[in-house]
Image 1 (cartoon, helix red, strand yellow):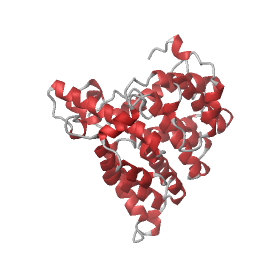
Image 2 (cartoon, rainbow, N blue to C red; image 1 turned 120 degrees about the vertical axis):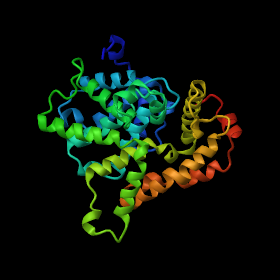
Image 3 (cartoon, helix red, strand yellow; image 1 turned 180 degrees about the vertical axis):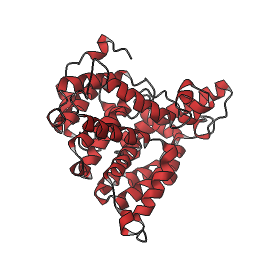
Image 4 (cartoon, one colour; image 1 turned 90 degrees about the vertical axis):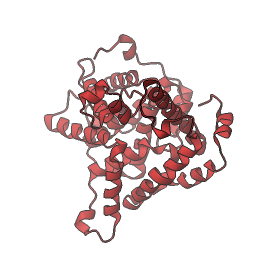
Length: 336
């Protein structure tokens, strides 16, 4: 991995944008898409500084700046899985860790790992999903043996960046700290594979079932971190509706581009990626009703402190009833 000099230049801070972002950095009202790419560099750094990680885990601010810059340079220009999404998930994990008071249960190294894993969870995402990579016999699928292809790649590239000779983010860690940090980052990123969604739903059901023996209903902090990063990765539907709408356009843009690639390659067409038969609004409704809504309900039952972050889900779902694809497109135009 070669780092270019331009990727290592920390930009000047736009003070107005920074203060605007800082005011909502710990809330779900933070709209990543309302900031510039450079603004998000400064706000990402601010998350680490607010928690005093340079002092707590002995990682210098200069190393953090280099690392954040390189993460940005490794995010591709996809409609959805891009640098703005990387920041959005990182900031949402941060918000949820404070709201749910998860940070109180973690060591400094674990909490640092939680934020880093969020930042790196989609590193070098190519804008297509795992089934596409497997079906197209891609190099990544071959490399990772068809198993959590993207998530394994994100993990690999994250540590290649952190350990790079020009960054050395973890150089001051003891061996024990490194092992603990690495375990958290790997487990968190691998948890974002939606193919494992049923696994997490099943475990949450068992944890919240009053008939489950008390000893089997104990929450461990690694599982809670995985739950938080999964929630954050799908959290567009939890944001104020004006924010949620923009992400809905972006994610469906990316779906439909994958469908176009499938058609062009003669591959079986993934139903949700078929722009000729799928509606953007219908996809949002279905996602909330059948996939993520039931999951969030279980999370709130298992982790009551997180309940506030789900407060807009019902209102947002109702709001989609007033939209069709034309209304959405006319309202947003290209402003998303």
